[in-house]
Image 1 (cartoon, rainbow, N blue to C red):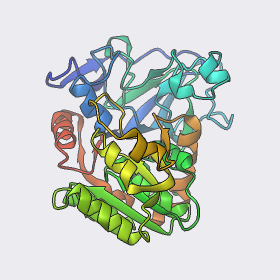
Image 2 (image 1 turned 45 degrees about the vertical axis):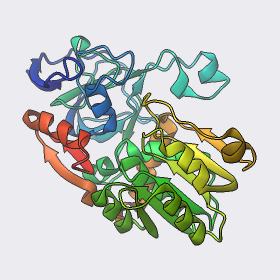
Image 3 (image 1 turned 135 degrees about the horizontal axis):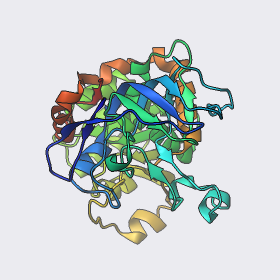
Length: 364
């Protein structure tokens, strides 16, 4: 029997249940879970803030495991086309079932908008199987995109970046950061911290991070931020004055919003220079409305705004390569505030929801 944590319904206590070992299809893989992150998405799921979730679910959408069993016949392949072997340590794209045929997949090249997409740990029901990372084992269906971790990349280091890294990589790519740019990041959670690191790797001349948690601001400083601003001790006008002083009166060249707080968006528009770029990645769920002045905040500023929702297999693949190449330059595992076994998953979820930790891992 296989143990897994089940979220039966929003606001309900998590349950530890047992499942039969699945019968694998040709091309399928059974992973023995090494670790799975607890992230803001899981808190949103627990609060019922995502639509179309088929509760009960097994949470955990970004995970790492060791190949324990391969389905018969057709070999399971990684994203490079190489066959997987038992014992290989891999991660996988949580998005499953993207059709590859709809307008968004073929013409728009925006697979995150494919209407057929399903997501491990989010939109696959526990009634249908082991389709989430908070479990001893994970059933990877044929067609799931699997990426081996390179030798030398510890799985904890990779999960310390977790889903924040491919999401931030998507956002930073959209931001088109150039050498010498001042980059401002709103929010120092996993996505924001990863964005701050990636901005440096893309040649940013200055990185400014804004948040309201001292723990997270301290992490931003350790990860190379040149300036941090605490929203609990400064006003919006004071933050604007500081950013302009640091940028010759202009504002940030590129701003990345990674807060999930609607009110942060109009402030981010004002913190960005005229003719700058503003990438909004933090508004993953519908947290409400915000107001801005279309003339002063957008049109007159000649501001370019880009929305960024989720990531695809290319972002995940590149994240693995970035972590393997540059992982030793940044103290990634320092972000792991706690490791929790399956029986302590409720505490892990509550700690993340309350922002008591930067990164929590479920380690069965």
